[in-house]
Image (tube, rainbow, N blue to C red; front, side):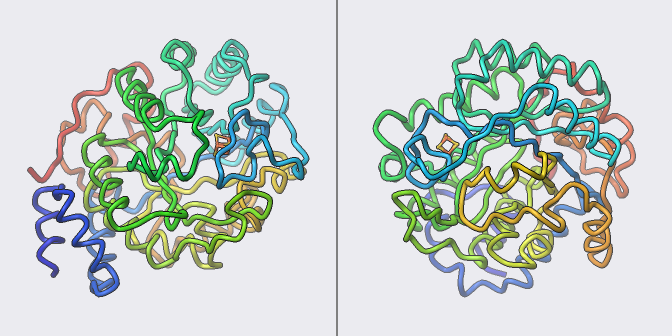
Length: 382
Ligand code: SF4
């Protein structure tokens, strides 16, 4: 085993220099061993269970202008849409019948989704589906807004940091969007008590081993409960429309390294990965992922949420095809869990102890979590 992988396994962290060295050598790693280590860590924390999240893409309007994103405000080629509260609630009801116990409300930063409107929606979802978790992914907001939504019942928030290097951030975003505010948002979310998701694109324009080393350092310091990474995929109507996509192999290597750094993290095999390669999602699970977020949005709008070109929207990317997903997971020894699937670190009875398979205590207590303040995270191996 590579010395730095062995070090990572015992310490759960590397210095920035060590990360950069490891990342520079990633193509010469024994990937079978790396992925097996990642699967073993996942097994220790989650057993055979894979968590499903029903993704509802609420609005494709966005006030921002990120250079890589098809929803950017200057993209005039996009036919925009906004889902009504009734439609979103209907998506939740359908998802509940299919077995989803987490609903992810994702969208651009759309002024029409006002703080109060979102709060009412979250409150209504938690009222109608009390055994479900609501995850929000609605971009950068002020602390008061995040608190309002938390008080309404939201307990998780996804906000990819995109890059932990300020100069790289500047390359990916216009000056009106600042790296410091993005990072401050992540710390605010953690401080409020959200199970917080960070993450980055793999192979975004300007990304280097040095910027990636900073990404891993940020993750090991912030200790997010969820990490979303997926390959950068170009969208033709953006400034990066001609840039090459991120690499499948890199994405899988980084998934595994994140699993070794934050062993109890919730780690999706993303739609971008499934878009890049027909077997992307399965390969992601083989590299240590344990979450999948099928699309619960009305089928008529799925392709209009065009973050990037060619977005997978059918087959196992679609929430109505859970049976197909189940069949794909079975040969890997994985099963779909029908529960909220909270981060194990925040479970009151986890206590930093590695759960024994099949993790029944964690599952049994998962639904009681919504009003617990997350205790300080403890790494089970130190
Ligand atoms: S990445 Fe998010 S904030 Fe940026 S343009 Fe796209 S939807 Fe808006």
